[in-house]
Length: 545
Image 1 (cartoon, rainbow, N blue to C red):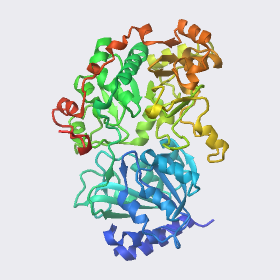
Image 2 (image 1 turned 135 degrees about the vertical axis):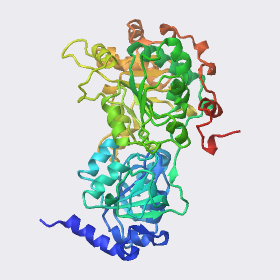
Image 3 (image 1 turned 180 degrees about the horizontal axis):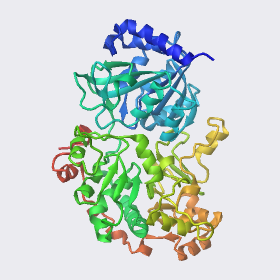
Image 4 (image 1 turned 30 degrees about the vertical axis):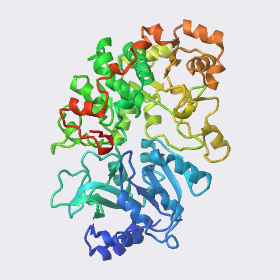
């Protein structure tokens, strides 16, 4: 056997260095030519598209390649955040895609898939995709982005390290080539996040600023009374019952409402210091009041959040802040923490069926999964204990071998915008698999992992259900006036209600009249700035003053 990957790498580097004159620094005007010398047809090209930061300059540079000479590329990307990353397929450069999340490009991705403009290998959870980079999806080339680089190739990424460490290690140590776009070339980087000997080429971008999406910023002004009611039920019916100390909140207004009610309703419930102390979470602006009121001991962030840099740097006891004074994030380790260490995950979905299976892949939109399947499942490998984990385990497994159980909560309104029903008899994911679009139904969180479903109608505690029929009727019992809810067995739902498996707001002492915006510790973005003493600097799109 020959060392073909190594030989290919050396040949590509030899051709590329003729452009750079043996320097690692690439001039902007030469980047397309460099890419054409290191990328060949059929290569696996990993583009750094994270939850928030995007290698935008290099993504655009790819479009300058000639599809008659370079084609059939296999694109590996955790998050498709830019239209250019799908343009690659329309031009004929690429044909196959493996991803974790599509977010803003989800609608277009669904159309392109339907029109057979690309082939999707699999939709992954983040750590699953990173693991495959070291196994059967080894990148031939990876295109990253950073804040600073020196002429040797040392890279500083500020708070947005995110996926970078996993991507570059998988590439650099498996005979791939690493190219990094940076905002600035400097004499000495502020901190070394990626060492020089892992990096082959760097290029300073003309805009001096890579694309960074404030994905986790939620304006409190858009939080409704229905969201506040569901948040109150979650806090009193679940948080106060199990007292989980370690947790993850998914992105969304429902969880933002809970975060803003910690200093108000949470204080009233006596949760401070007893629960919700250690978080896996991006620096959510809606966490500022709770942090200021002393609720939080630690936050491990998967990534950064635009505008939160100064505030985070002022809280080194809570966030992982380096000796240089800036945040260091890691999606890989945050995902591991959320999987093994979190007592509870609270998230949402686009569709939930009568068995509790959920998916963010629909006929019109392929959002993907991100970290939800990893956070939202019971970790079979967990062995350390906590009171919340053990209590949930006892409730779920009243007989048999004792073990703990992770709390996995889906908090959704029964109807979405445009009166689209959240609860459905059959997920679109099932139909897409039956049509051959995917080899397996792209389910985000399997119903067997879900412990509770919270809607404006009440809480369904699935841990207490003893049969599949009870689980189904508990879900139908909180599905309201959707088609799924209207098919409930009224007598069975009444029985489940009597047993406490279904709880309405009034059952746990919550008056709907109290579910007003007065419960929020901040009611708009400007309030969050005040709470932060001016350290939070929201992006311009969120400013109305």
